[in-house]
Length: 319
Ligand code: UDP
Ligand code: MG
Image 1: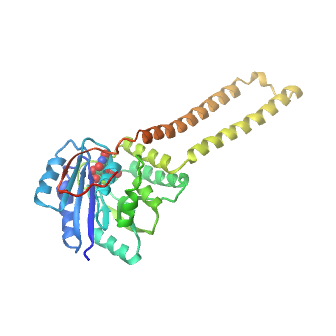
Image 2: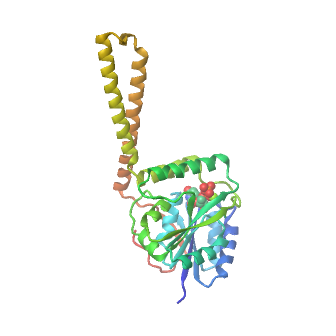
């Protein structure tokens, strides 16, 4: 039986790289024996991405295109790709060729050799990325892991190979705030790392400004852990203990005459600002969780599709 393979490529304003990534991916696919397709998700691009993808789809029926009605975000684009994937295996890959498509055959080999359901790519080295991006990414993955209730592999992006059982389980998840690499870890089964060197972006600029990075970071933290709440409680307890100790110390000091509490403007000032800060942070953390509950409860779709190309009459998965 011939196995089938889908390549899922999210694109947001990638006019400078699409042609090249299509060429490299399709060269890799034509050297393999699988029935294959490339699903490009045009995440509300406002450059020429849509036209370029349409013209590729017209010449190559293996290329499917999903266009969103606006920019919904990278994680939503990948989700849409997986929702429309019916193959035995799928690879999630960025459009900018930072993750070399030439590794795909070897990733499949690793999957076959190890009998794993997921082969996730771990970056040994990141070329062509700024110091700030590297240091924040490194710091972020370590912190997330210490907060998270399940173990999330560090230094991995969404570049990975999934088999059918993972795709099926992923498509059953209904949460709106998606942190895909975390969810895939959470699904379980056998998952093995694959080490590679990350190339610099082929052309164009990063589509992940600091604001999007922070959004992804908060989603991953809040959806994978309730530890921030516990940290808030712990700080609360510590302040109470501190306050209790200070109270005893100052009351006794006043009675026995070893403190001069009435001259203590500074200590009052420090305590009030400290406790005020702790309370605001705690309310903020609770607020973030409540906000996410609100978002989930509204139950809006994760993305809206404006146009699909080359899908024929494929049934769409219920989402
Ligand atoms: N992307 C997307 N929607 C967005 C932002 C990014 O579909 O809102 C895509 C982008 O086109 C690329 C991938 O997500 O294929 C990763 O983005 P990028 O390479 O800019 O991120 P970086 O590698 O700099 O973290
Ligand atoms: Mg990139």
